[in-house]
Image: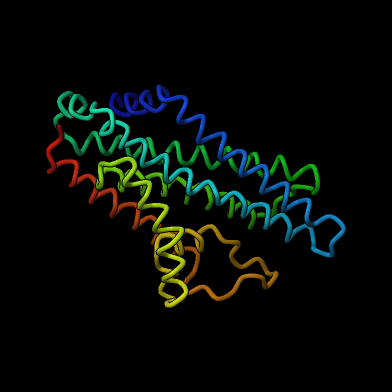
Length: 245
């Protein structure tokens, strides 16, 4: 518990970075939700479909939690405080486990705030009376964002470079995965971005608006969790065996 409290304190004592990420996430959420909800006014699109589209805006929380996960680990490497942390707790795997736990928790909190902003904004144009299936999508978005927080923390622990890890994330998800998807459409579904998209998708809504996935939502959630766990394990191994200065 002391390690968890210490890691949570480190996040709270970096208010400018955390506030910047939060404000950026809320801005994207509000603008995306407003654009989606306003677009349905005067159109034949059913409000239920619009609610699904509004909820989909909440998946943007994933990229923000991914970056935050990277920062939670690489802050200390960048500022040179990781040496003191490891001296205070020689069992490095415990330190990393506490960082992953905080990344998981903060990722979930960011996703909740994102979804709250999305739904509150949408109420200015449409009614928000979510069905059971839509609430399950909300839960999957929160879980997916939390897992991506761990994924980011694992990548940060592996690379131990803040800028390097963030560059890798944006190159992979904005360039590499889309290019792979062009040539290998089905294979791309199994990559981290594809698994996250499937996990946070609408699923079988009965509206016939989602087809073409290679696997179900449950398998996508398991695959997303596997990516997070594997990268966390590899990142922990890197932190344990590599020297720090």
